[in-house]
Amino acid sequence: MVGAGPGGLTFARVLHRHGHPVTVLERDPSPDARPPGGTLDLHAGLGQLALEKAGLLAEFQALSRPEGQALRILDTDGTVLRDWHPDPGERANPEIDRGQLRDLLLGPLDVRWGQRVTHVEPGTGDGTVVHCADGHREAFDLVIGADGAWSRVRPALSPTAPHYTGVTAFETSLDDIDTTRPDLARLVGDGSMAVYGAGRSIVAQRGSGGHVKVYAQFRTPLDRHTDPHLDLTDAEAVRRRLLDLFDGWAAPVLELLRQGAAFVHRPLHVLPVGHTWTHVPGVTLLGDAAHLMPPLGAGANLAMLEGAELAEALATGSGELDDTVRAFEERMWARAAGWARRTTDGLERLVSDDPSEALALFDEVQPS
Ligand SMILES: Cc1cc2nc3c(=O)[nH]c(=O)nc-3n(C[C@H](O)[C@H](O)[C@H](O)COP(=O)(O)OP(=O)(O)OC[C@H]3O[C@@H](n4cnc5c(N)ncnc54)[C@H](O)[C@@H]3O)c2cc1C
Image 1 (tube, rainbow, N blue to C red):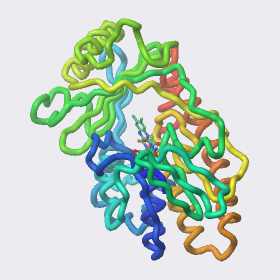
Image 2 (cartoon, helix red, strand yellow; image 1 turned 135 degrees about the vertical axis):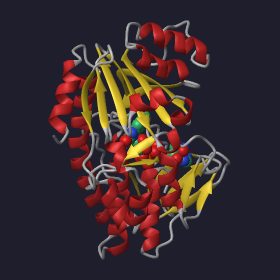
Image 3 (cartoon, rainbow, N blue to C red; image 1 turned 180 degrees about the horizontal axis):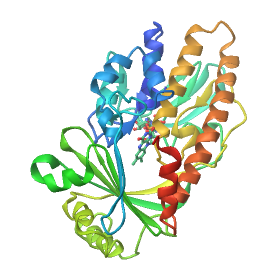
Image 4 (spheres, rainbow, N blue to C red; image 1 turned 120 degrees about the horizontal axis):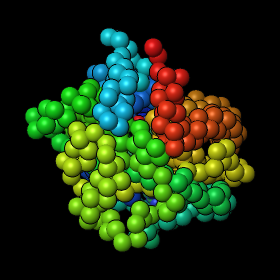
C-alpha cells in the first residue's frame, strides 16, 4: 500500500482485522509531520460503512460530532438565508477531525513512515517493484496506489494527470474561537457557515476544540497566482488581496479572513470524470489517486469504502488475485464516476456567476 491517507489506512486496517499482513509506505516522516487538515463528514453508506468493515464504527460514533452537520447560509450582506440543524439522533453525515480519524485508523498498524515512493514497475518476474526516494526497492504481489492527487503509482496505469478546475481556494484557520471570538463562534454555529457571491464564496467549518477552518474560493483563470505580483507566502499580502476581492461583504464574515492565521493556497484540480485505465496485473489505485474530484464531501468517503471493499475481497475471496482486483476496479469506476459528475456539477453551481444556484443546490440536497 502506498499512502497512509484515509483510503490507504482503511485498506490496511480491514486487512489487519482479517489477520493478513500489509506493508504501508508513507512519505510523511511521522503521523504528526504536518497539520492533519480540517474536518470530514463521513456518510452512512460510505465512510461509516467502511469503518464498520474495519470494526471501528462504535469508536467513530463516540468521537464524531453529529451537531457538526448543521449548515447556515448567509447572503453577502449577512442576512441568514438558511439555517439547518440536524434532528437529535441524526447520524447521516457526522463530522470528525482528520487527525482523530487518522489516529483511529492507525491503531495497531505498522506504517513505514518517511518512505517516499518515486515510481512503480509492474510486470517484473518478482511482481511489482516499488522504488523509493532513498534508493530502497522492494517487490510485492500487489501494489495499491492510495497516494492521493499527485500519485506516483498512477503513471504505471494511466498517462492522465489532474487538471485545474478554474476555481482556486485559500484556506486559513482560527483557534479556540469560543473563547477568543464568541461573536464569530455564533456566526459559524455548530457546523458550517457558507456565503455565496458571484463567482466566489467564503465557507467556515468548525472542528473540535473551537478550531475553525475558513475557505475563500473564487474563479480565476490562472491556476497558481491570483495576481502575478502576489507573494503567496506573505500572509498579509494574501489577506489584503482577499479582502479586496470580497470587498462589500458583511463585516463579520470578512472578520474571519482578518483573524485567520497563515493562508494555504489550494487551487482545485480534478481528474476527468470517468477516469479509467487498462487493467495491469499487480498494481491498482484507489481514492484521489484514481478519481480526484472537487472537495464536496465525497473524496475521503469513497477512498475509505474502496479501501475497505478491496481489503475484504482480498481477505475473504477464493478466486485469483487478479480477478479480484479487476472486479474491484470495475465497481470503483462505476461508483466514482457518478460522484465525480455530481461534485463537478456541484462546484459549478457553488462557485457560479448566479449565487442563487448555490441556494437551489442546498434546497435540493438538504433534508427539510
Ligand atoms: C478542503 C477540503 C475539504 C474536504 N472535505 C471532505 C469531506 O468533508 N468529506 C470527504 O469525503 N472528502 C473531503 N475532501 C476530500 C478528501 O480530503 C480526499 O478525497 C481524501 O483525503 C482522499 O483520500 P486518499 O487516501 O485517497 O488520499 P490522501 O488523503 O491524499 O492521502 C494520500 C497519502 O499518500 C501520501 N503520499 C503521497 N505521495 C506519496 C508518495 N510518493 N510516497 C508515499 N506516500 C505518498 C500522502 O502523504 C498522504 O498521506 C476534502 C478535500 C479538501 C481539499
